[in-house]
Length: 128
Image (tube, rainbow, N blue to C red; front, side, top):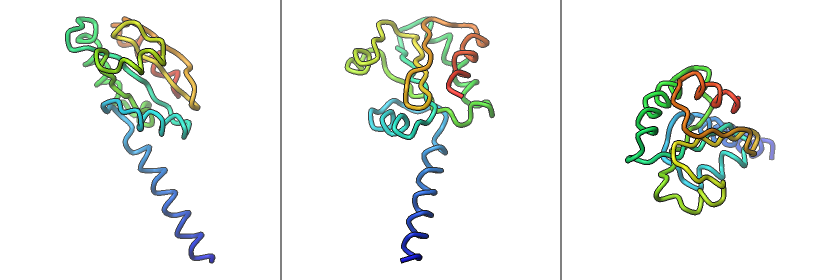
């Protein structure tokens, strides 16, 4: 019995660590979003569109910030503004170039149209 409990705890620990190892940028999936919020893991949903000039300015900043050590535990989920219609409705997002920040399974901040690195960094920091 003790061996089974130990095996379970080791497996659960590895799964928990693996969940945080994927922090950084990744394409939005509903399952990843649900998993992160159920675990209370910090995450940011970034609504972008390939045709959006503001998003084109934001993307290198997002890439840079995602690589910073202080944001290592934050997952940035990139949601296609044109395809994620249900998600936009659920989160009440009406514009591309929007960041919605989650911490502890709930929304803690949001911003739209920011193009200054410090402003985006300040928004992302609210996930910590």
